[in-house]
Amino acid sequence: DPATFVESLKKRGYGVQLVDVQEQEPPFLPRKRVVILSGCPIGREDPVELPSDVRCLRIFECPDIRSLSDMPFFQQTNKLGFCSIHHCRGIESVLDLSSTSQPCNSFQNLELLWLENLDNLHMLVKVAEEASVVSKSSSLPMPGIFSHLVSFVIKGCPNMKQLFPCKLAHDLQNLKKLVVCHCVQMEEIISSEEEEESRKGKGINTRTRFSLPKLQELVLAYLPELKSICSSNRAVICDSLWDIEVRECMKLKRMPLYLPHFRDTHQSVPSEDICISPREWWESVEWDYPKAKEVLRPWLYFV
Image (cartoon, rainbow, N blue to C red):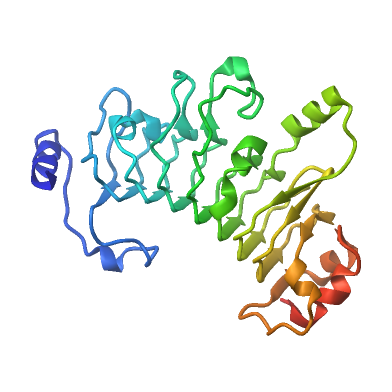
């Protein structure tokens, strides 16, 4: 009951304000079953309980929260479709599964995840330390966490070095939009560590293909340490990708994207172009499929 929820927050000293959700950013969020937490002391010592049918959760300037798992709400719901976290300097991971072996169902309907200006964020999902790295254990409680994710935006997270562990990346079959900007330590989009260790153990040297079949928009901007999108042994097939923007990623030397529809130059011109900055990067970067630069030239512009 929303009224009961509001009253419970007021009794505990929280400031509660009704806002016009239509005026909030991003503009495409739903207007019903929305909770916005701003300046709340969220933490394990003072857990916030939310209605289990919340569809949209927005968190602003809550410095004490370390992960969404700090909120009992996340053990009780699978309704959440939209989640944005902004200016929360204490958050270290989006989800903390380090103390559980149970599958995580909280994000099974999540379509939009927006992370911005999170100074201490260094991983999406934290698991038990004995796993060492999120993607190393085959029994981690992570399958399907992002299987319904359509749009993912991450901006201004200076401690993120790898975005998606390899196992999580396989969940992204519904992803249409990926924006990664102003993450000054970001080195990899899809971490190659687990994959390379597995290949060494099995003695595999052949190149494999990985598909993001619905990805339409890819933005990589102002990532000075970005060195790779994925492992050197992997190519990414993007059947739907029309909108590509790469700005100031000077250490990125290889584009592993395979874009089948761009091979047919008789297709209609996409609504968005390929935006590149600077020109010197385009001239030096290598593409995995033959004659990529020649095929893509009609849609290319420099800024």
